[in-house]
Length: 174
Image (cartoon, rainbow, N blue to C red):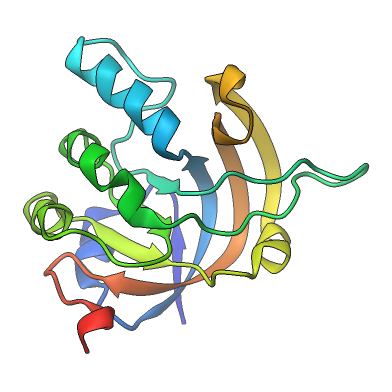
């Protein structure tokens, strides 16, 4: 088990290999397709984002509402290829980790190799379990998007699998 803390260190990211099991602790951001469209438009227009992607990770999730006394509702991963057309601009800005489920396009994999990023997978259908590792949750932009708003999460020991490493090795192809 490899323990990672945010912001992610480039040397640590490059040392990860497809199939490694990691535990992530620190700050992650959430975004799905609608938030990605807005972030990419902001980048294209030269505007700043609500967070600096350099060395950060995005979890593709649209959590359900929190029950009373809980930080977040069920927080299972979203199918990642839905963000593929909107990923490269964030990788160019220094994004190092993407978390979701399912395959990625060849374009995204090539960009991950170019910019030294990894793709981690969370277990689909395990949203209630995953939410146990989320200790804080705050909407930081695009509140009007509801579940798809951009959020800052504080996570502790979020267990994930390296699916595609920074060399392009792909667990789905093994």
